Structure formats: C-alpha cells, structure tokens
Image 1 (tube, helix red, strand yellow):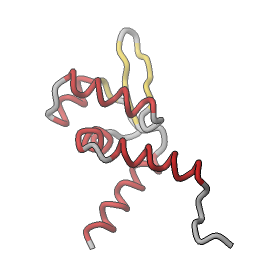
Image 2 (image 1 turned 135 degrees about the horizontal axis):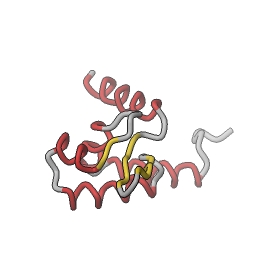
Image 3 (image 1 turned 90 degrees about the vertical axis):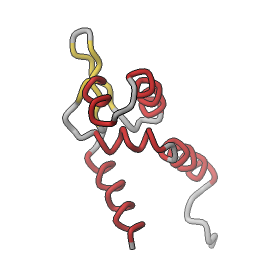
Length: 98
C-alpha cells in the first residue's frame, strides 16, 4: 500500500489551489466574501485594494472555482461557491495559530 493517499492528478490539482491561495491579496479577497454575493466595489472597500487589483485576482479565483460570479444587470457580484470553503480557511487559520 502506498504511503501517499493522493494520486498524481489530485496532488497537481491541490497544488494549483494552494498556489492561488498563497497570494496574500487573493486570500484577503476570499476571507472578505461570504455566501451573499457582493459587487466588486464592496470587495474593493472591504479589502482596501484597487479595483484593477481586485478584478485581476477575482479572475484567477474564478478560474480556479474559488469564487462564484453572478450577473446582476450590468454588474457582476462575487461570493464563495460553498460555505465549506470559508470553514476550511477558518480551520486552517485556527490550526496554524497553535
């Protein structure tokens, strides 16, 4: 039996997610979101990042499936695709504190 519980494709996929989350501004954006979708302007206000910067990082997060876009008229709102994502981040933060 292999010591590694993950196959090569799972490792590669997880590695990409951790790489995306390793960028502090992306993690800041994710932790500012909840299940209620918010416009980019609200994300800008809560993170202190510029709109250009937020839009750039939202694209990477969206492509990785870590945020969910919802069109609302001429605007796009963003939220977490699953409440468990925020719980995972919170648990990892709590684990890291110890």
